[in-house]
Length: 289
Image (cartoon, rainbow, N blue to C red):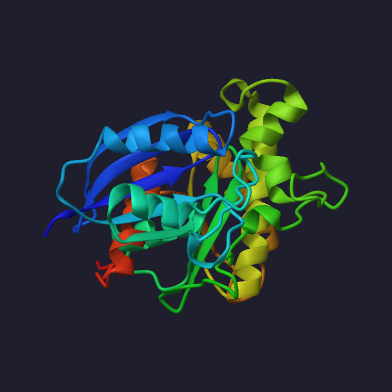
């Protein structure tokens, strides 16, 4: 069996890689997200894809920020203003010559972590990306939830602080407006990598608050968190998130819920994108212990 061409599209970077049918990331490359307009950005994406092509690809799987039309036929990532209603799936299929499947980047993460990561063997969990933005994917009863338009799982737009910051979605106090890299820069004037302990605790607390709402609403006991902000902040972030989760998830079925780092680390987004592709052509990406 060949491999999947995996593509991860984020507000900070564009990445491409090759993912084996076993879930192993074989190769990868990335570039900063830049481009004056939609076509310039797409050209940058094709350049990074060309860096990893091997000729052995069977399918293309993509994880991207949302919202999007079903199947990624048109995408409008909040953190990529150059793309509004951009026909991503069709354009990539034409450019690569491969069957192409597109999903939300955090839903892709959820697939990958349930396949070969920290949620393998778990039937009910939420997976999150805390990076430039905040996204999520929900697995319930062993099935990834899609929603009516494919946009289920947008935990970044759960309100965690009603009197909080304005969000790019138009709301106020969303998790993304309090805990994302974009929010940290807006509030502090500095990159998340320069954040002090107080900021780290606040971001972790807000994430724990969002996870607690999900645990109480959806009857789940595991949250798997990836993304440059969360993984960069490390143990103090996860301690703050767990503390807030313990404080707020008090129902019998949600008490004891855990928030843990993504098992695949920085490779999670590309393995997840590969899982989107493999699932699209019928390959089993259900986690196994």
